View 1: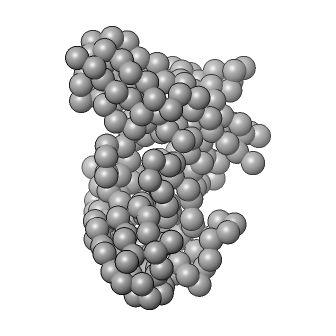
View 2 (view 1 turned 30 degrees about the horizontal axis):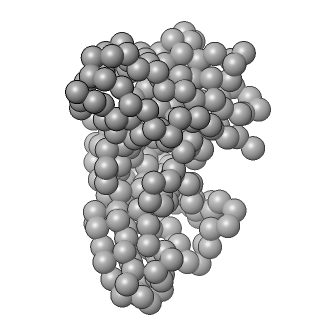
Length: 116
Length: 117
């Protein structure tokens, strides 16, 4: 069975500082990996995804993630955070089924706090 | 592009009531939609996969007679929580995957906060 681990429940970062959110996955084949962001009481917005190709993936809002197969990781990074980045971040893994990812397995999320 | 609309955004009702939640893909066609449930401060858990024109596939432990899913068109899937009880109170989120070859991601709605009194 596939699983996703986000080791950090909360992370506090100063505005303007760099950010890295960790994500480790367990999956028996080539994973289809995602990072989503959720603001309070809202749905999820896709930040970026990886299926194949370049292991460094660029997303929206200045985020990037690097797929490392040897470490089963897909960490999310941003060089300089803004106060508007404060939110809940979810890493997810899905099985690829021709048209795209099937139902996703999510990590428990990392709550990002931005301090002035 | 790739907007998913979910309605209603919030519903409060009495125990025993049935509640219908709609999930629409506004600017794309979606042969496959997914329904997730999220408890407070928890992650999303997949409930079921809905394919247009066929029966939904439910995850283990999800009661299909409790959570009725209909996906009658390429832009609309509905989730009906039948005879809802307080333990059904949760945040329900749908997602839709576009039609076409390749690695189509899921696009999520804004969710429905269901509160059963």
